[in-house]
Image (tube, rainbow, N blue to C red; front, side):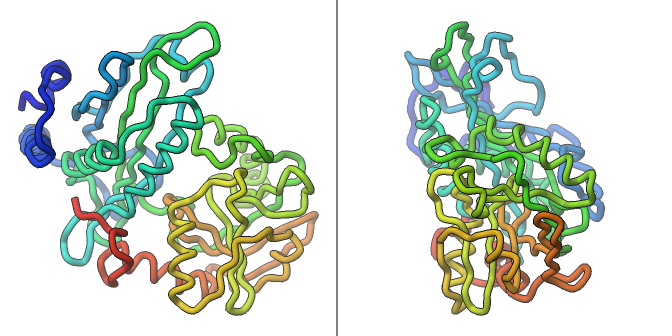
Length: 375
């Protein structure tokens, strides 16, 4: 039990990897047994914090000690000063990832090394000390083990995890924080969009505002990249759309991404998606679908995709950790609405790739090595 205490853990001497992991597992098991088992309505899961997991992982960084090992704590408020860098100047990056049950009965995580790499890249972009891949992945595993009773039954949803790295130390003038906090909290979730996982969504092209510009931070999963899209997104929802698609800031011609997910267009056996040129997020699901589509006989091209090309496509779909893969039912541009699917039915290619991806994620099919990591 001592190995999870904040002070005793910080004072602990370095240990062999296996011993340290075993210590976390044993302490987690005892902690989990000391609280009531989670009571969750698995048949009515939404995407939110209604069923937030009981425990979170917290680690701190200082210039003198670097990253501590961290500890599991009850989910709750963080002690943070009003002068924290993240609250004033926005030093914050985050990730989104999921754990779920496989058909074999295990709990598995999808490609956590990719999330670790992306958070490291984002940390360096924002002049923050990166968390090592080993610490990141082991912290994620510890959160899943501790909250295993919040992992939905197979087919009911997933345990969504939010790793977060913030400049928590106080500062007045603009500069890097003097100290940092890395934490992971989680919640049992269902489908991201209200219509359900396979229900097509209706998108509208945003022409007034841009999400990112060349040479900026659009390719970084920084917290500050997300709230600016809310004005466009909320207006679109008021008009009956599910979300918006942003165009490139240079020519207002090419699709970039949806508010929180990547976009693909399908024409015959060719699938196109905007390239990673620094203005769109390098999604883990995006990368996985590109690889899977090639394995299923599609020609995949990472090229600029114009609005007009999208309007003439056979199908359009979006990808992301939260949405997984979602078929686009319609795309509206300057009042012109292009319908791609029958009412309430996903596109054929979208369904094929969704099935291929989720079969791997649930252990029904074997995917590329290292994609699925058991907890």
